[in-house]
Structure formats: C-alpha cells, structure tokens
Length: 151
Ligand code: ADP
Image (cartoon, rainbow, N blue to C red; front, side, top):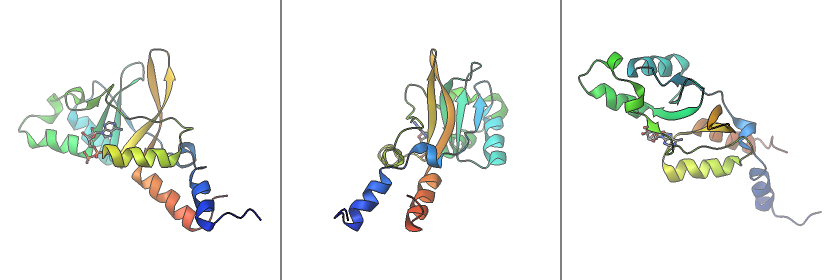
C-alpha cells in the first residue's frame, strides 16, 4: 500500500500522458496556396486549424477558422489572396514535441487562447510538422481518465 490519496494517484496518471498518446494527423497547405484553397482544405479535411509549410516542408504559418473568416469579410477575390498574408507566422507559433506532457499543452492552449498546437520535430534549418494536438484530443484524454483506462 502506497499511502497515496486518490487525487495524488490521478495527478500521477495525468502527468504520465504524453502528446504522442493523443495526437492527430496534421493537415497542411503549401505557402503558395490561396485563402480560397485553404477554406476548401479546412472544410474537406474537417479540421479547425491548418498548418502552412514551404517547399521544403518546413512550418511557416498557422491558419485558424477566424483567420479565414476575417479574410472572407473583405470584398476581394479569395483566390487572389495568398495565405501568407493572413497567417500567424514563425517565430510566433506555439509548438510542442511528441514527448511533451499533454497537460502542459493543455495549459498552453488556455494561456495563449488558441485551439491547437502543431507537433514538430527539428530538422536542419527549420521545423517539420509531424502531428496536431487540439482541444478535442485533450477532451478525449479526460474521458479516458474518467473511464479509468489509463494505467
Ligand atoms: P479561431 O481564430 O478560429 O478562434 P484559434 O483560437 O486557434 O482559432 O486562433 C486564434 C489566433 O491564434 C489566430 O489568429 C491563429 O492564427 C492563431 N493561432 C492558432 N494556433 C496557433 C499556434 N499554435 N501558435 C500561434 N498562433 C496560433
């Protein structure tokens, strides 16, 4: 018998969950894509956040639903607006790695008031997107904790 309280055991369980255990597949668009292309991708791929990559597949930006809505409010032709002028760009992107704690990512989502983080790995002269973690992934972990399915 360890003498640990139920709440201490739950805290320990939570602090064992890694980003890698709950990640989703990232949806990316190329940096030469238009706002119109990005809206189509977001709708067809059924995601709320898109990651923008350059020709070397390095992360250069993030696009949220509201970024695209804001661009669509203007009266311009959406096919003529490049995503690069409306995206949030590096180095202002909050990222995580697959070995980070899920609870630390949850804290970042709250602090920065954002819905998703790209999971990245460093490569020569840039970073590559290898996954995506969203509020939905965090919610799934909470449901699993309540089912007592995490050992
Ligand atoms: P929405 O804008 O649809 O409410 P978010 O709350 O995720 O969705 O995004 C809010 C703003 O933060 C947007 O301008 C978006 O580009 C930016 N953003 C989203 N995710 C990130 C991130 N991981 N790092 C930095 N900025 C982000």
